[in-house]
Length: 180
Picture 1 (cartoon, rainbow, N blue to C red):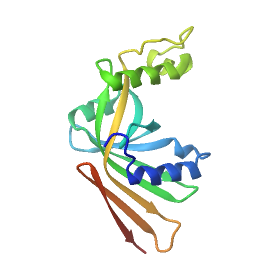
Picture 2 (cartoon, rainbow, N blue to C red):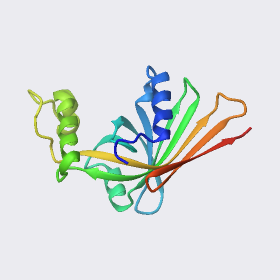
Picture 3 (tube, helix red, strand yellow):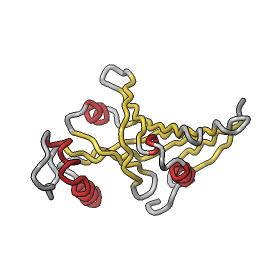
Picture 4 (cartoon, rainbow, N blue to C red):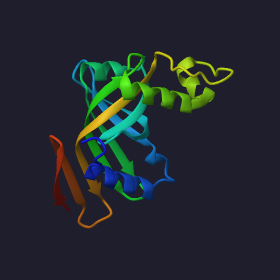
């Protein structure tokens, strides 16, 4: 499956391209479940796609979402693109790649850290370093959301159209629903 682009990603990429000038193209809602079974929702910055069905987000090991995702690795990512009146909901299994990351995820984590520059690294350091650090600090975490189920609601159409993709092993099924 690596290298194969799932159909929901093609639709999402096209929608992000159409609305690329709008801030919400970069910001998504991430919903998790806390230790009491209660929903928690916050805004995070979308950093790009992984090899196939993954969305990439950066976070701080000290944040509540890290503890929540460690205990319960399922989450949902939601985009609403106002300019195109589209919503994407992506149910995911999440993994956290921090200081102990290995292999390709460790390399990607380092690349993303270095791409932050000194000002971006200050989010994890508390102060802007004199020059960007080459090695990521322990609290710098790459959050990878591996999408298992995706829904695309198009509100501009009449009737509204919803496309649902579900992952079955290495394949995706597609269902198109129409509503009023």
